[in-house]
Amino acid sequence: MSEERSLNFIEEIIENDLSSGKYETLITRFPPEPNGYLHIGHAKAICLNFGLTQKYGGYTNLRFDDTNPVTEKTEYVDSQQHDIKWLGFQWKNELYTSDYFDTLYDYAVTLIKKGLAYVDHSTAEEIAELKGTPTEAGKNSPYRSRSIEENLDLFGRMKAGEFPDGACTLRALIDMASPNMIMRDPVIYRIKHAAHHRTGDKWCIYPMYDFAHGQSDSIETITHSICTLEYVPHRELYDWLIEKLEIFPSKQYEFARLNVSYTVMSKRKLLQLVNEGVVSGWDDPRMPTISGLRRRGYTPESIREFCERIGIAKRENLIELSLLEFCVREHLNKTATRVMAVLDPIKLIITNYPEGKEEILIGENNPEAEDKGGSREIPFSNELWIEREDFMEEPAKKWFRLAPGALVRLKHAYIVKCDSFVKDAEGNITELRCSYVPESKSGEDTSGINVKGTIHWVSSKHAKHAEVRMYDRLFTAESPDSEDGDFKDYLNPDSITVIKQAYIEPYLTDANRDSKYQFIRKGYYCLDKDSSPEHLIFNRTVSLKDAWAKTNK
Image 1 (cartoon, rainbow, N blue to C red):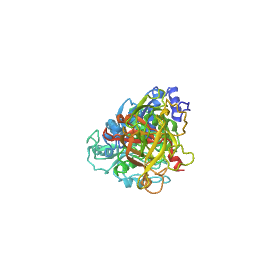
Image 2 (image 1 turned 90 degrees about the vertical axis):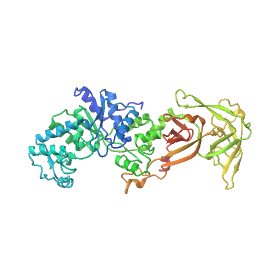
Image 3 (image 1 turned 180 degrees about the horizontal axis):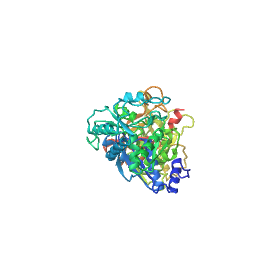
Image 4 (image 1 turned 45 degrees about the vertical axis):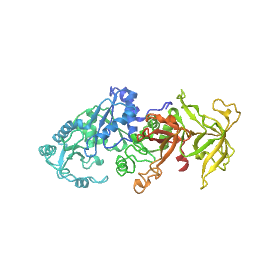
């Protein structure tokens, strides 16, 4: 955005901390769990953490929170790295919470030695029952009074693998009457006999997120640990652990997570859509994942602009998906190559154009670009494909496209007049017969004829076939998570429409996945990863206008 904006509350904190000399260098981190693909909500956190260190100097670490070996995969690590780079950011250090497993274990031993942690053999159900309620204090575990020596012995045996999963946990000894339920002796280590994607079978005990998070921040001397609002109650534990361990005092700050209309952001629910075959994969173009948006044709610039526009807030709110669509339209309007594609074809024959004659016409690739984006050659002949919707047998009022006796301009070409049409046995129009005005060639028009309508076309002799996938919103409900019933009850049955036989300019034969195209008058498109030279496939990124808003008021 070109206009100046005021500082958000995190920027105000950082500026005060730097100007006061509290910190010499700003250090942030982006700590995804490698248990799924990143989505648009993560993009906001990425832009915030990396954007702050770009603005104020310093650096950002990429730290994978890999403390749950059951759900984590190297595939997810690779995809998350790719997404961050694609968005335009580069971390200083690639780190893993698993890098610190030895140190975290030592920290846990330190807490035990200070009388601040104990091994509890209660079941998960018993722990939950003893925790109390927000208005009623919890009760002490019967194992809370174990001696330091006994706890050290038991914790060492947990590490050695003597106990099965769920047999016991290590809990911080804090206050079972705390008004903050999280402070009621939280579990900080649990047993999980599962191979880890990096450490293999070395460990069978793993730290809980609340224990690993702040200590990992401290090890990396993170100055500003930025989380979403659901971690506000966890901040007290974050600070307590750092204080009791007497380590570098990283500080946690919270902002509102991103909620976008007509989608879900839960990785668990997105995984459900993938596993149940509702979508084709994590990068299905209807998914809110960064890989899905990329495959659909969204640009990193448009996503960064979206994150800039929505800003950083302290209160949860629902952001309209139409704003994200606006951002990509705005960027593609300036960068996408204009081409012609006919998605619902009807034949147009120019009866007075010489049989067998061909011309090469010139079209601007992007009149909105500063350099016009160059130009391309467009073959023209006497037989064309046009859109069926561009002809009306009985034209409505203010109809400026083709109709019996009506004149229209063919984009980059000539003015034509519809003289007659042909119908099949079922009454469907199969062919239009037109005459053209030879003096009306675009750029050289001396005909003196003014027409109000311009339509696109493709020369049938030169056209190439393509499959076109038209994507729409995955859900029909604005907030599928908050509606009654299963969120899948609100899946949009029309979220994808496949056109098997579209016709495109021969220019698109050399289309590549990095390029973006505006199919003139139809929308913005990109080449899909399933495409091949023998079978071109294009995905619609977004329509030219926000048609959804008009039909769903």
